[in-house]
Image 1 (cartoon, helix red, strand yellow):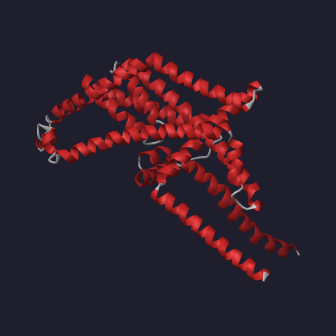
Image 2: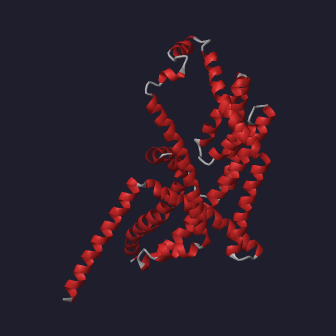
Image 3: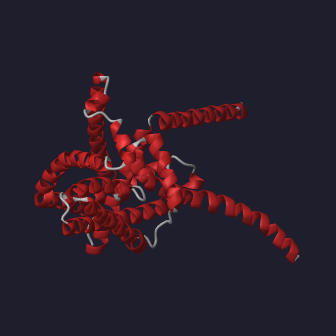
Length: 357
């Protein structure tokens, strides 16, 4: 009777685990944005926790007090930036929204001086509204874009809130997650989580340093060149620097369009400026601040970002690189070290012992 009961319990447990895995897979497929928000919150918590631990160790403070100091410092930093250059950036962004269409018109006029450009431009009606036959569909598209922007802002605040709550009590969340796994695997899982935490912390700190340097260098360079809206363009360049390889080129587009109003030579100078800053960031700043980080191959990173961007959208594209960092650590620790290398050693060891005998 006991054997049959034990057998029935194993069947029930297997069915339950299978249904749970199927549910998680269904959530991952149909509600991937939820998992991206969770990962974004964890990434935010990692930054807050790492910064708080540094302050706690340096000044011998309690963790909760250090976390409060970090949050206050972040608010003061954001408030200071807003007070010093916020009004200027706000004016510049509004001016940029008016300047870019003028730049496109000027670019259109310059292109018409060539035969190929003239043939292309001739196919475009003078009134861009003529391209839109379905006005209701166009309005729906604009409304959808506006709602998407509101949704992106809401997602940002959700990530911040999740990060603050996790960072406030990281040990409890960590222990709760580890208890979901078998007892004999918990110690190894704890080691892997420590490795992921350390790697993500270094990656985020390195990325924040790179973003700051890129923003400062871009603002200084654009001011020297006399390009309009330097602060707004520098802010865009710094934020897009979070997306490696692709982000800097996306930040170059509005800068070139605005510089084109000042003349083609100005646009060329802006391209040279952004290229030099990108070279400095790639070959000097990044190697210096990422010495102890996991190495990310550029081609692999770009292909992964394209895949995640196509599957999940903008939020996935933004978080693609830190997700890749976590996957590389998991593959290295759980698959390469715990599976491949141990199985290889197990097969080689008997042969060596036989030869020695």
